[in-house]
Length: 307
Length: 161
Image (cartoon, chains in turn orange, green):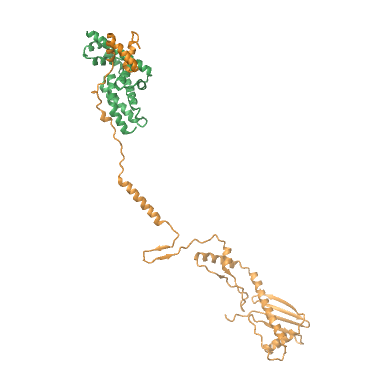
């Protein structure tokens, strides 16, 4: 790089600004030092460098400084938070509901209170409760009562709320008891009893040769309900009058023996039952019809002797 | 930028900005106001300014603020400076004072580019960011400023001889 009149200002400017390479700097400096006019010009160019006056300073510097906003967090706050957390955790553990019997330790004795679910199980159908708990006894016939309906037995539960539900169910069931069914049941019982009596009498007749004059024959003791049997036979008088006369004037043993004699002679009997349960004094009439003979029996309940 | 970094900027750059403004405006009172305004703006925008670019950012704010003030006082400054060059030139008895007098007569762009270059050591790119010029424009402005100062000094030397 060679200095001349056209480029010396620009080259010296680049030399001053540091825009030249080291090699160019050395070449330019050699030329400047070798030429007096160039050296003088170089001195003027170097004088254009501005030198900052370090004594000139800004005095309001402190007013520009800002204080850091430091949030002071007291140390005990952390420990308070930790302590509070521990207390809450302990309280949760202590008071958390558990499925254990409750223990009361204040009195010194441990009292175990079994947990019981008080909530009634009302979702179960009431009909099922009734079927399980209610037992309806067979009706018993007492002498003065036409039909006796004993209240159903209730298997009581220990749970009081369950009992309430059961009692309600029982009441409802009692109201729904079909009286017709009870009447029918009652008829079947009476019929069975009569059949049993008839069979017993037949057995007695078959075991022993009946004899009207035999006084050794023991009377058959019948359990309740007692049955009045009235035999009617053809006589010159009115048949009923004859029967009444016979029954009235003879002992039961005699009446029974006579009846057995007649029964033994019966062949191809026709038995007809006439129940009459709807009246205040229910009865069951039995008509026996055979060749040459006709018998009528009326059964009525007696009062219960125990009552 | 946090508060600590902001304070560090105040400590490092407030003097340089102040000298830069004083050199260009030759008014310490205005320079103090400009420096204060500059750092106030930095504090407001400190969250968006990084420490690496803080120096250029501060000088750019100061330069723009200075330009605004100069434009407001332009007529007043021109009237004051007119006709006093010749008389004042005899008051300077050393080279530094001659140079300062020459710098004061430079156009604003040349003066700003030259002061930023010599006072703070900014490169052409940085000066261009501060003043809004390209690197070549910065280089030309600095070259013209030095040439003007050189000729100004040369004239005074001739006159003194």
